[in-house]
Picture 1 (cartoon, rainbow, N blue to C red):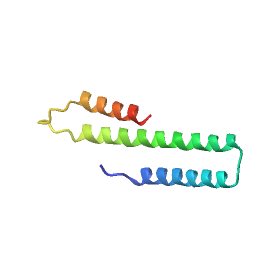
Picture 2: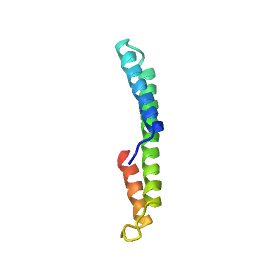
Picture 3: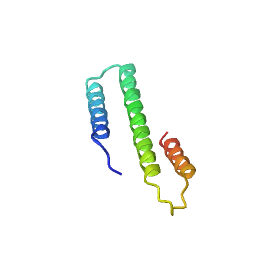
Picture 4: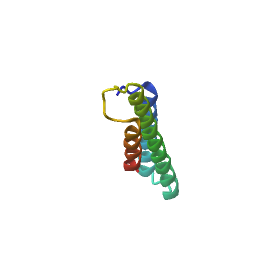
Amino acid sequence: MQYDAKIVNRLKRIEGQIKGILKMIEEGKDCKEVVTQLSASRSAMDRTIGVIVSENLISCMQNMDENNPTSKEDLVKEAVELLVKSR
């Protein structure tokens, strides 16, 4: 799968969030603030996972080989399983 610039940019933003959280911890910021930022980072990761899985699913369905025994239903089930595992 090819990962486009949108995915890379999302991950770079998450990386920046994590660095910010580390700085907050080093500065002894309030627990509530740190946890809020951790939660935001986790949400951003979850959204990124969703984008990757959905783009891959679309790509797989568009490029399905008629001779491939994998059905569209199987691809959707596999995508859902990936999303469930990621939680």
